[in-house]
Picture: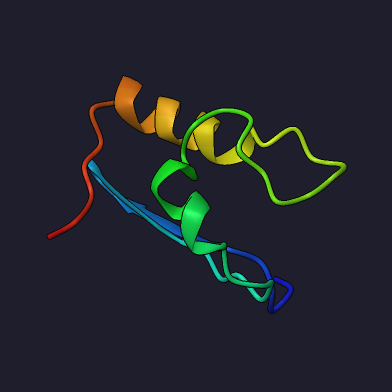
Amino acid sequence: MPSNSPIVAGVGDVLAISVDNKGRRTPGHLRTNVLEPYVTTKAYSMGIGLACVKALAAKRDLKEPK
């Protein structure tokens, strides 16, 4: 597996996803909306990737670990 690949591991009803981002930080004014559709810092991006992840997690009733 390439060193920049996300690591995904699941056991039973538990799924853990680790994402490593080597890019620039998200500007402060976008951080509260970064999971909404069409929010992007790139001229060539649609800004739907994180919105899709949010929708899939909600559909499966996944919650952030505490």
